[in-house]
Length: 213
Image (cartoon, rainbow, N blue to C red; front, side, top):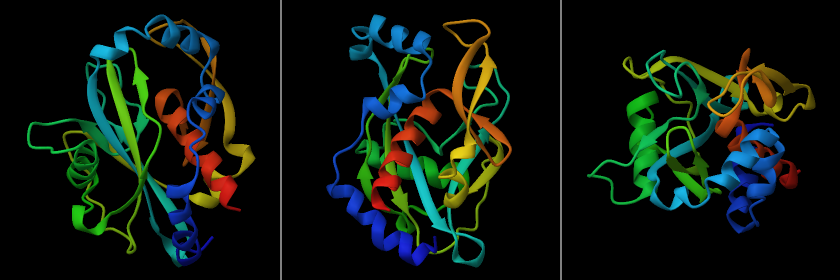
């Protein structure tokens, strides 16, 4: 889909009912669902973070989405694929501000160039004890991406055409903070396996995009 056609449609998402947790659960192994229910009370004290699901025109004006591969470090999200984003800082006046600021810092997209379409369904991440608020946004020109050296190992540009292909839905055996060697639903995007909270948020976006067809 060309970005011109995509951008005309995507604004309708702001008026749509979000699939919410139903979409999240489709990309969560049963062990994670159990963990989320078990820790429901703990969510009330969780720290806050926000991320941006950003669409833009790529090669031949085809619509793309940007993901990042995080650096390897001593932390629960080491070397994982995610969205640009991060924790709330004192200077942020809202979670939307957090998502915009982090997007500029991590991938070099100026805040002023991003049009926020809507907030999506937030999600609790037990290992890091964060509630993450995703936002869906667009930028109308292909960004000159600049990866933040300290945080980002690689930028992953995903055509929406690829994202919506049923073939990208896979299962992968992994070890997580709550289980060892389990099969998890995942996306295979740009040669990278995307699972966990990012896959759960992606599935809500995917559901919304399918409703626009």
